[in-house]
Image (cartoon, rainbow, N blue to C red; front, top):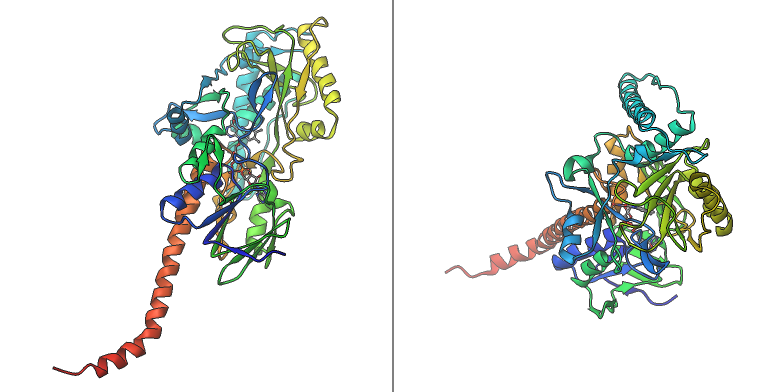
Length: 465
Ligand SMILES: Cc1cc2nc3c(=O)[nH]c(=O)nc-3n(C[C@H](O)[C@H](O)[C@H](O)COP(=O)(O)OP(=O)(O)OC[C@H]3O[C@@H](n4cnc5c(N)ncnc54)[C@H](O)[C@@H]3O)c2cc1C
């Protein structure tokens, strides 16, 4: 093992929360910090890749919550840095639902089913809340069973109502959503934040305080400080550590804590679910799907819930790119991650042929991100149970001695989102700065206690005039 390197604060993870936290610390004079990042770049779950001649977002793509009373801080940053965005209009989604023979469900039937599903979801939530209050088991409405009902249930629960209603992001920031579609990528925003406090040149971070490809495997904590050990046996010591790894990573055994985290902390971490959300990109030689206003999103109704249900064409985002995106979640995401991309391509093509007929061209390329099998992520975002006690997220966030926690999963109001991660980073840094102040005061006090007898002696010896 190499001899330890020493700093005041160590930040584990350089996603949006780790970088926003480090920036605030630096702005408050804590410049003696080190950021240890497991992968080869900053941004974490904000990640672009070149595909089919354009830059596509494998992770976060949308700024969710725009146009409301308060301004979404990510929307403000995106405007400040001039990133290109497109408004996502979901109003036609219920009228673009295809059955397996390629027929679109009539707008009356689809709208009716949609309304029924929304009403029943709200009824289920209210029943559950009542049952929780009274300690009974809740009455649930009939589960969806037809392909149309299953498709609508998927849209509502795996997209719109995955959180408890009212959705705090919408209440605070508004209900509009904008897709980032910029060749520089959404992660440009994270880079610009880093540029404020790290040494950069020509779009590259040169600052030695950022350590990429450094996988933390152990965090030892004592009353006096912390020691962080990486997989390549480097040792970093500091007064504090701020851990920004995802909830999925906390639930895995990638990072060991010595002594182990207390039971209340581990229980809270276990209680939070992890959603896996996968955007599969398909490149075609030409466009064969309907275009124009109202056609950006379309739905495939199958008797297996979530089977290649939610489709988006990228014409708004990248005109002329001839790219389709299909979104899978949870069980379907894990199933597809485990199979070859050729199998996934074959399945997706069968679905597209059901919708648009047998004569459509084959996709020329496919991109399947694997967020679940990525050991530095283990899923896409946190999903606190719909009826969940705020105490769970507070325990997930609460520091343990000199170990502080941040990340989207520590945000009480906006978990799961980029703005949640950004604000969580700021919040955790403020708490850490407060703790540093208290620690300083405690030190000054104990120093003055040691000095008290001495100053008493000195006072006695001062000759009286
Ligand atoms: C597919 C997908 C789609 C999404 N869509 C949206 C969207 O449209 N809108 C939206 O607002 N949000 C979306 N999100 C969620 C959003 O991306 C996250 O909430 C946010 O980016 C999380 O930031 P973070 O800093 O909390 O975590 P991360 O970005 O995960 O940062 C944590 C960092 O820690 C690093 N790390 C992990 N383990 C270690 C270790 N042992 N040692 C060192 N470093 C380590 C990781 O590599 C990572 O860089 C999406 C996420 C995914 C995956």
